[in-house]
Length: 185
Picture 1 (spheres, helix red, strand yellow):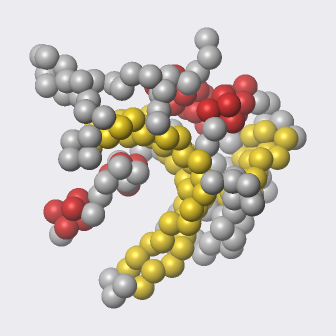
Picture 2 (tube, rainbow, N blue to C red):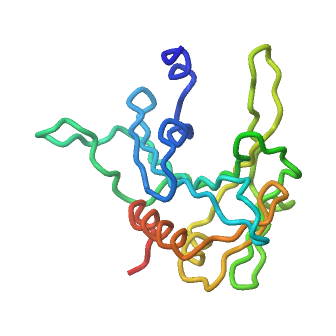
């Protein structure tokens, strides 16, 4: 069973293997020669209700990873990521209201699923080929990520639910930006 699950994994799915929120993680996909760095957050509901959405910030670095000569483990990638995305996915047993992803950063609204945005819907397939869309993934500009680090308030809507990042979430996001080489000093 586990082998079957792993065979269907690839770059973009690293966060599924480790359910650790608030900590930056890295995985090198040897078969695909791609390094994936991600941060999984469960933002607070603005109305004080239990959270229903997971946000996953992901950076991808294609290419053969340089190896540490002593341990043989892949080293951290150098340079900016080739691709930066933000994924919103409902937590288990959550019925997705709308396939939306909007951020409000200090009163400036950015619609990541608007007409001019680059995004895609992600299906969750069940045995028997029954699929339903339960997530949205949007391309994220480095400047938008940087603005989230210094903002007083980051809130918005993900999958039709109100969200708000806490100060701890923003600190974790700053660590993510540093690890992927996008944090301005």
